[in-house]
Each structure stands twice: as C-alpha cells, then as structure tokens.
Length: 150
Image (cartoon, rainbow, N blue to C red):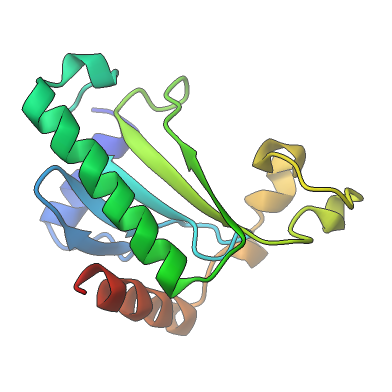
C-alpha cells in the first residue's frame, strides 16, 4: 500500500487526526506540518498516479473539488497567494498540496524575496516545531470545515 492509501485507510477507520471532510472524489486533510500556515492536502479516492488515468467525468469533478477546497483554504487562512502542487515522484497516488503563501514566509532562510516553497530547507519545514498542537489542529480543522460547508 502507498502512503496516501495508508492515510485514507486511517480516515476510514477514524484514526487520522488531520482529516476534515470527505468529498465525492477525495478527502480533505490538514498537513502534518504547518510552516506555511493552512497547508492542506486533497487526497484522491482513486489510487491513480496521473490525472490522465481518471475518466473525464471523475477528473473534471476532482479538479473542480480541488479548486473548491483551495478557495475554502484561502478564506479560512487568508494569504497573498495560494500555491497548488500535484507532484508524485515521492507519493505516486494523486494528491494536491495547497500552500497558502504570505510575505516573509521564506525569510527565516535568508530569502527576502518571494519564491517557491522548496527554497525553504526541508529539515526546517518538517521540524517537529511546525506540527500543530492538538488545540491548534482542532481550531484549524473547525475553521476549514466551516468554510468547506459554505
């Protein structure tokens, strides 16, 4: 099983603390690490590695729902720019990374200009200090769920 399938299985059995909402084509989860506050993922229900592997109707719905999730993230966690990423070399299962971006979110690394998130050192981005506390996580989940249900 892949990492995303494992995370989806945790959602199904009620053990994924980052789970927010199930949609028709995927699951909305808050990211485990929050250097980019509001970082959210949208996990495809189907285990596919490429958008081209989804039938057109499902693909169109998946893309539409991803855009709806991104809009909810923007409202819940105001930002200057939303970064959308559908990568896959690490975890081949289709999943969107939605990163709210704000001025100065790279400054800790010495960058004063705006740039891609990969300019920020991974060891800092994934440092345990960037994991939300249970209280912070609950607050984030409530904010995002409220916006998803509008």
